[in-house]
Length: 227
View 1 (cartoon, rainbow, N blue to C red):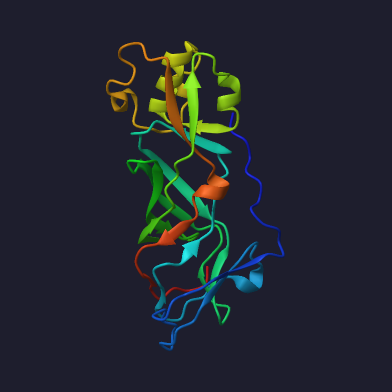
View 2: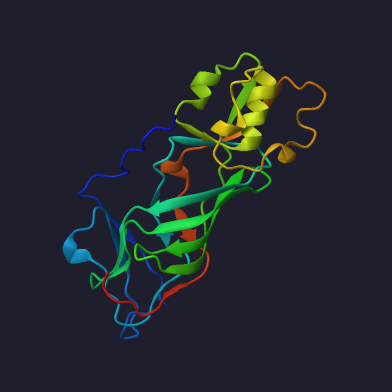
């Protein structure tokens, strides 16, 4: 059911991530980093000492499982994103390799939803705590009894609570919990479906545009070897 995400940039694109003063290279010198898409063998990571990526750095990400994500306003969904570029310092050392994963969850913010990154997982399996967030997403899709469910669901990952809302409002019982991706389940609905409501809004997330992660605190990388 889910579509395949297109690449966010071409192979010639190089993103420059400005690292603030306080980013420590192996010699203790601040070194800005670049994010290079589609890494080659010469860019395989090699760490010789501690390096620090400072707060405020934005990590480009991908999510290949769906073209959009639909959530109820009060719904939480676990999510794993892929780092979409080599994060490198000025000396061309790879600090975070392309293909690393950011594990966390989408959660409500009161006026929308936000991805909270909790763990960075390197390709060799090493895990590192991380404190990062996406921007707050406030885009919504209005659902009523005339909604074309097929068009809403095309290429979408949908939370359990959002699925229940769609099913209850549209009367389409084919939207079952077996088809949804994660989510908080029926318990998150509260009184939303009581009283025969005929319309609701779902938060609509475009992973390609909405989920790049900004570090909220410095990320220190310990000594590592090539993998």
